[in-house]
Amino acid sequence: NGPDAATSVSVNDALPAGFTLVSTSPSQGTYTAPTWTVGTLANTASATLTIVAQMTGTAPQVNTATATNPAQIDTNSSNNVQSVTITPQRAELALTKTVAASPVNVSGNAVFTIAVQNSGPSDATNVVVNDLLPVGLTFAGATASAGDYDAVTGKWTIPTIVNGTSATLQVTARLDGRGPYLNQATIVSLDQLDSPAGNTGSATVSGVRADLSVTKTATPPTPLPGQPVRF
Image (cartoon, rainbow, N blue to C red; front, side):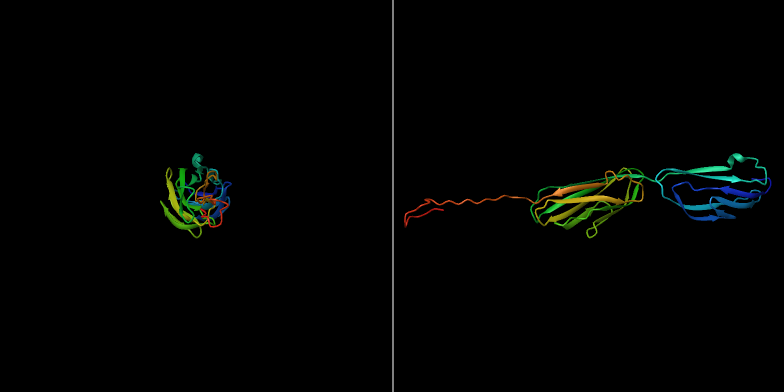
């Protein structure tokens, strides 16, 4: 901002803990972490540095850049420091799983319902739920309110669950035996941070059991020869 050119300009911009440097692109000069050696800036001229970094931490971080100009007197040093706060997105998900009725007849169908609720504060994207049927249950159909279910892998992929909403999946399975069969579903991944508590749900289904017994009597138990006997 003048009135003279600034020489020997440099900017200190160290990435905070929780970030991994991916690339840098200065419009002039060079960047060797944490220093951007800008060089000379003419009156009213500007230079930019683009830093691409991957956030690996889970807590909010502050990134600060500080400009220095030792060759000239800076008439307003109060604007030589700028900071930004980066807060990772969080989406608190909770999964529940129920079965419509148990027991059911062997070779009959059981309907499982999986619901994933997003309590935010961010929308949840690219959510993957693992719900692979156990041995003894044969896949008969599925209906999802969002996304797609692959019965072979057991993966239910949901593109987006908006903050404050939920997604549901109904899986119909045939009972191949009496069981009981434990069917479990777990949220395995999403783009946002999410605490693992409440990310697993399960339901158990059993086949109908009937304990039969047979009794037999003869009247009379000791008949005379030629006498009728009732069984």
